[in-house]
Length: 386
Image (cartoon, rainbow, N blue to C red; front, side, top):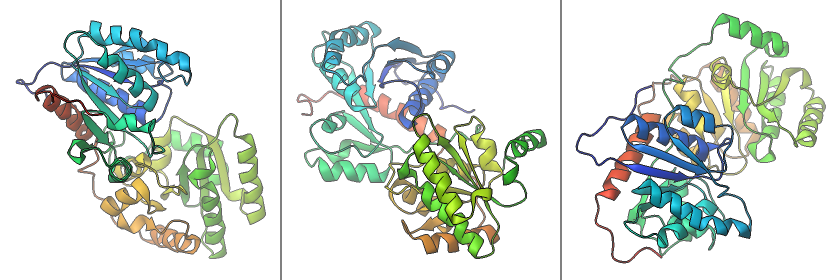
């Protein structure tokens, strides 16, 4: 994978990123991606979190990890402020970057009591947090990264005292090395996969990659298959990642719905898998049917990077991406009839998809490192943001 270039005139950075834990999720992935870019550019990367399955990868990519439960929702968590202050002071950090609300509060308080040179404070708003005092900490960064225009508009609308000039749009990006244009998996992988899910063989595959929550629109996907069947269009559906511990009742509800619609033999439901790229690559359509606006929609750019058509509800970050990159895949939110009509159109003749020249991981990494350098080189304001 290519990495952001090293600016020989740039200051060497030590960046401390604050995140609740390193299990999974968009903020966590971005944490690793920026850590990797910092190390590749010759900087020091430190992550403070409660730990998790991604720590091993973080360390392998050259970052340091300091375990503190800074995302634990308890008044006792405030007692971690002195320890976090010591970590920041001993590291010699010149940037502290908070990616979640409780870690941001701890980081902000730790910086305010720090002796000696104070690092610059950066925050990233990854989602549409409930407006109010608690969420407002994410606007107190000297720079506030917004992952989409939707997120930026949300901040401007609900925090009118915030200077819009410090809100920086840096969308997430897809790794072209991990999701290469036109990629197709090896025949052996395809054989194993279809042996595991034989009902998916022999017809166009529609894949909805999403965790097991009602907001992800699985019911719309089931209705879509039923509506295509009524039109005489044969298709199979894979609900990828819907089976999760604690979500058994929801999966049973979806299974009952599939049976009632007469499409149970056309639908497979799986737990999260490591071969998402391969599954997307063999899919005729990748679906994004969230019932509520999402802050970004990473699966949209992952699928398009692989040259696979995406069909999704045109609201939130997903709508932004489809409007910008693949307008043919847009459908009004909740419009069942239009969803089936557009799916049939795309399955018959999908518009060509060019290689991505934006929303690439390297673009996100470079923009973030440039922001760090600009901030450390900028005179500190005499009055901090309140």
